[in-house]
Length: 124
Image (tube, rainbow, N blue to C red; front, side, top):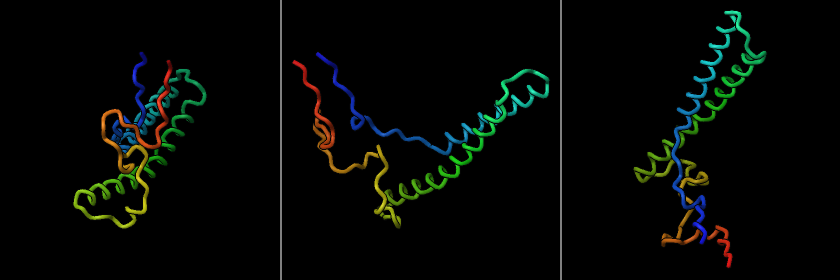
């Protein structure tokens, strides 16, 4: 007897605040950058490209933040409109995000599979 495989449609979507996650990552890169510069000033030996890697991490984090903030605002506006029963301009034209739980009608019976899921493997 094989255990039942969990397919992604069985799992609830994970809600993550991307802005907080990106800001935390930037903070970690800045902390490591400061620590590496201090270590260099103290004359300690650190790998040659440590500072450059930290600066690249901060720059990439800022680019991610430039994407995440407008995305978060758009999501909050859409959520507020859903709660109030209104639709935001352009909201009906956007496809639902992957894993957003808004993939259309589903059969909610226990063990029911979504129409796009692959059939389970059967072994005698």
